[in-house]
Picture 1 (cartoon, rainbow, N blue to C red):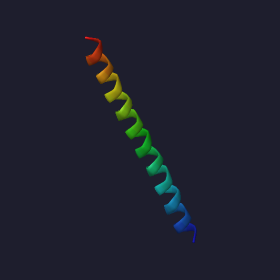
Picture 2: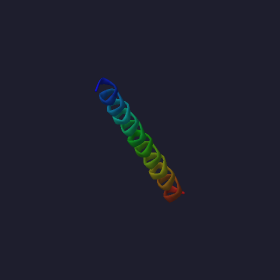
Picture 3: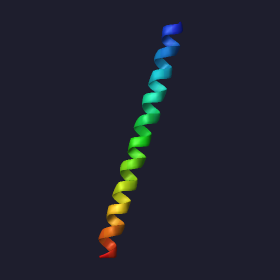
Picture 4: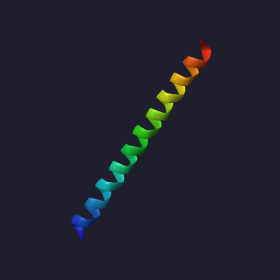
Length: 39
């Protein structure tokens, strides 16, 4: 049982990390579009 909860905890952190990466990439893309629009 303990191993199962540990696995789900790790999965939760991996999902959170993936979401952070996605948000970061979206932010970078928005910044790039903004720079292109400015010029």
